[in-house]
Amino acid sequence: MLVAGTADANHSWGSYHWAKTTNLLSLKLGDAVTNTWDASLGLASGDWSLSSILDTSVVTSRVNPKTCKPTSGRVEVCNSKYGNNGWLGIAQIWITSGEHITQGVVKLNDTYFNTKTYNTPAWKQFVVCQEIGHTFGLDHQDEDFANANLGTCMDYTSNPITNQHPNQHDYDQLANIYAHFDSINTAKNSVSSAKARDLDVENKAEWGKEIKKDKKGNSSLYERDLKNGEKIFTFVIWAE
Image (cartoon, rainbow, N blue to C red; front, side, top):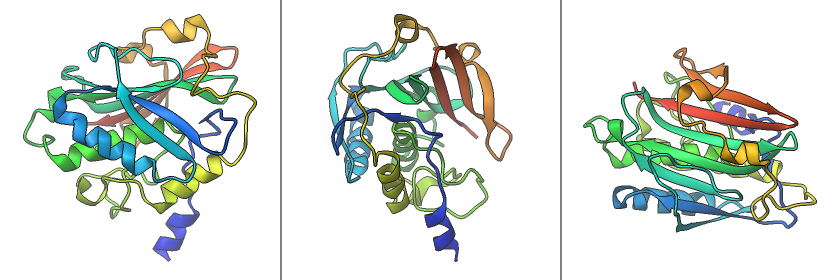
C-alpha cells in the first residue's frame, strides 16, 4: 500500500517545464565544479538521462563558480565556499511565459561539504541529484525527514545512503510533464528578457517571498516575481 501511494503521488513543480519541439529534451549541464564534484555531477547526469524524455550532457562551463551566473538555455552547476549561510545546496530556475523554464543554476556549498558530516559520497550525490532534478520541473516526493527513505534523491532525508539517485516515479513524472510539444525549444533559444537574464539573485535577500516550508519549518522554496510572466524560483536544502 505504501508503494502504491508513492507511485500515485504527483511531485511535478507546478506546470513549469522546458519548452521543447521534439520527443526528447536535450539539456546541457555546465560543469563549473571542481574535480571533487566531477564524479557526482557525471553520475547525476547519467541517472537523469535514463528518463525516456530527457538527455543531459555535461559540458564545459565558463561561469565563475563563486557567483554562478545563469546561461540561457542550460543549467550551470557550481561549487564554492558560499559561507555559513545555512544552506547545503540551492537550485534557481528562471521562468518566462508563465510556465517555461529558460535557464537554471545549481550551487553546492563547500563551506559545509568540507566538514566531516557532509563530506561523503552519499551526501554529495543526494544534493547534486536533487538540485538538478528541480531544474527539470520536479518537486520533492516527500518532505518529512522522519519518514522512511523512498529510494529517490527527490525525498528529504537525514541519511541519504539510499536516496542518491532518481527512482521510477521520478522518470514517470518527467514523462507526464513533457508529454506535449511546444512551439519553441527553450533549451536552445534565448527567450528571457534582459532584466531576467541579468538580475542578481546571489543573496537570500534577493530570492523574493517564501512560498513553502519543509517539515522542520525551514523555508524550502522562494519566488521572485518579475512581472509579465517572468519569475525566478529558488529551492533550498538546509544543513542540519
